[in-house]
Amino acid sequence: MRGGGLDLKLVSRLSLLTGIGAAALLVLSVFFLTDQAGTSYAEIIYAHSLTQKHLKPVLLISGLCLLSFVAFVTWLITLYSSFKIAGPLYRFSRNLEQAGSGASPIGVRKDDALQDVSALLQESITTLHRHYGTLDAQIRKALDLLDAGRPGSEAELARVLEEIKSQVRQVRFDE
Image 1 (cartoon, rainbow, N blue to C red):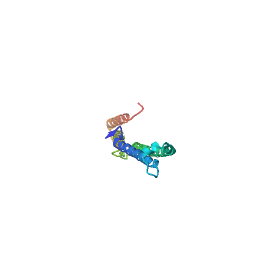
Image 2: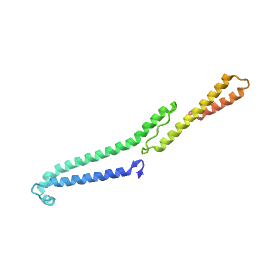
Image 3: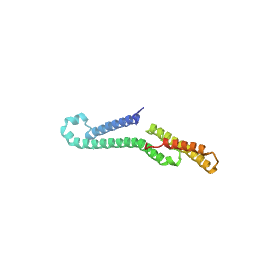
Image 4: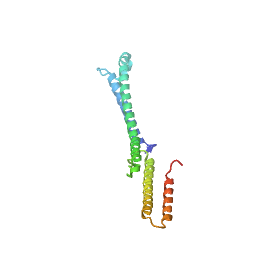
């Protein structure tokens, strides 16, 4: 199940691992608080001086370990998520750089984000290539008519030039 481009299964697994890590640190803390004589945690609570002696370092160490673990998990989620965005953006920039050269557009991986934007970009580049192909064919036709120099071909040349003007107007962005 995906929610807003974020893999919820992955987030739930990482949250579960974080909870298990926190529980493990708590168990280790309890074992550290017991002394070598085998007293239980309940006896240690009653022996207040022993608890006060070890409580601060144990809480500090377990808190730092847990904080480090959570920071690492957060970093992994951020890295994973950024690759799902950065990869498609890199491919988009390559597609835009190569759009005029006639190279076919590069698609994004099937599990990356921005699938809809990628499809629109690929469609736009394909349409642009088709437009350039049509425009090139019309220009060649006009040049052939000029080179032929047949009498009475002025009307056909004017028609071809109008088609070229119409094609050019389709892609003008400043209008």
